[in-house]
Image (tube, rainbow, N blue to C red; front, side):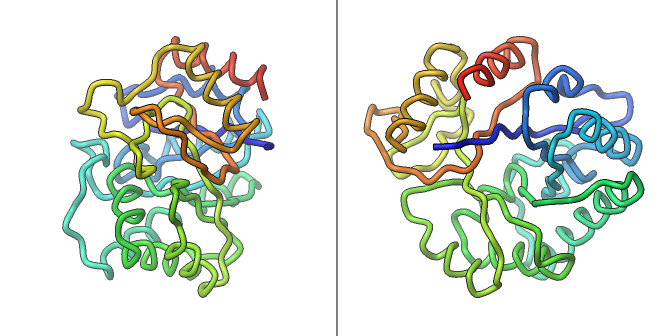
Length: 243
């Protein structure tokens, strides 16, 4: 199984520093850049595109609910019309900086609460798809790889849009294929050897071990890694050597 490493990036805001983008960018293939609603600002977006170009990293938009205080991780009671409009707004903002720097926007990966909600509610997913297609139908859409994605795959096929299946390197999964909530013990893996072992299992057998020890089969195009601290960057460097 051939996997690409992706990371969430461009998540600083004003004088608030978030992530070690300069350190992690040399090790990843794809970067999902914040578009201003959960993190990021115009200056950060511009600098992020330049950084991606410097390292030959594929560029993706990372839209979210309008939730700076909660870093976009909270679900919000937005109408489908609002979701479609806010995704267009954010992807359009990043697309402007991509165009201004002579780069190319290749895909969209919703962030946090919006990402989780669209995976649980196909109506929200369809609103996200519609927003992205209205901008550029050739953009791919990154989704959380789960055991049953038939509804999402059908919606994408009807919209004529391609999906990228994402697995998280350092997050625990439950037996249904969902990410274990961050407020639960064991939801985030910090042991490098454990993360490398699950990567090799995924490459070799196409399965991932859940928090209970069950093995679940998952499609995988890309592996999400984090670079928000030195320990995480060191883990990504190790994973890069295993790819």
